[in-house]
Image (cartoon, rainbow over all chains, first blue to last red; front, side):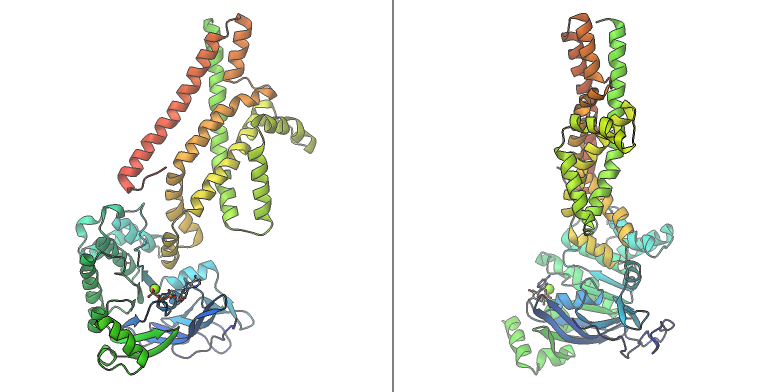
Length: 282
Length: 217
Ligand SMILES: Nc1ncnc2c1ncn2[C@@H]1O[C@H](COP(=O)(O)OP(=O)(O)OP(=O)(O)O)[C@@H](O)[C@H]1O
Ligand SMILES: [Mg+2]
């Protein structure tokens, strides 16, 4: 296992002496900057040297065949999966590893990791709502118990967010009474309630009945248009083509091709992307 | 059976109830603590707890009571019969509760834990806010079964001189040469105590199912 040094440029949160610099306030620091991300399970490499910068306001869709490493890569960005090597900066600040006293990287402790994760929210394929809390309870849980926002304020904002996804009337419903599409919209409200710099979507419509896919994609489209920075792993090609600012195509754990949706869908220049798209065209 | 005998039985019932409540109340948090320690999988400590729990679970309550009352004093811990009885029942039920909580923790949905971590909940907050409220609900059935077993296990502490329902009934039967009435009364008392527990469980389970929609065992 290789431990990388943390010196990596875009919006680097470190000075050369390895001590923490002031939070990077520059508005054009990438929302996320991932460098040389590698991940191996046992001996199998599933991610090989992936680099990705996402600018504030940008929507990036990650596409690729099954097993190409899309989910694994996304989970490395909020350190749900620990990369074997590589660095991730969220809004200029590191997640997962910090420089230790000797300047070499050390793993973040639970408190540091939790703090770093408040800058990024994730929407999961299977919703992962907390079933003992109402829709509104799910939305305000982290703002109140992680960010320490006053409960009344969080509740008011939570109601606004549920209204925004069309679920104002279901605020007091428990998850088991909601449809899949409604659950996922609650999950999106929960993600937004953290006011994250970056929103990660892990195949958000893959577990939905076909008739509910549209309502979730509509919410995501609105978010993208509203300037929310998003990375979306999806198999919804039409959505990616319409909404993404940029497509990142993974195959075999590598970024094989990246470009605008127009370029990617109309004139993919790698054979692997062509083959991938041909399967969807049928 | 005289009125005095009835009073004796009721006094004994309060001992049975008191011992059970004390054992259960102390055993639950200890069992939970042990289950959490085990789920942390600390080297050495994990095996030590596992061995201890198996030992206590295997020991009959009578044996455990004799151990606490007669052996612990040699280690400098001398206890009167009632405290010794509480310690015995606590140890016994904590070991079983530990296994119940451990199963509940092992079955806890991973995706919920992951979501909590992804949203920045620290381990302690995550346990308090997300895991515990669901863990106790999911474990309610087995926990109540275990509570009834503790209740029915209380006669075992008679060996160290505690007069609880069964011991009292036996004494009355021996004095009056009419064992049937006191043992009938004893049975009614146990049934009443257990009925209260089971009623409480059904009530809680119905509420949980109605509200949160997850069935509990
Ligand atoms: N925990 C794990 N242990 C071992 N191998 C794993 C693990 N998680 C993922 N993999 C492997 O890593 C590779 C990439 O998996 P990943 O789930 O990231 O792919 P994906 O692009 O999201 O695929 P899909 O489109 O099917 O969701 C696969 O070959 C998978 O078998
Ligand atoms: Mg996947």
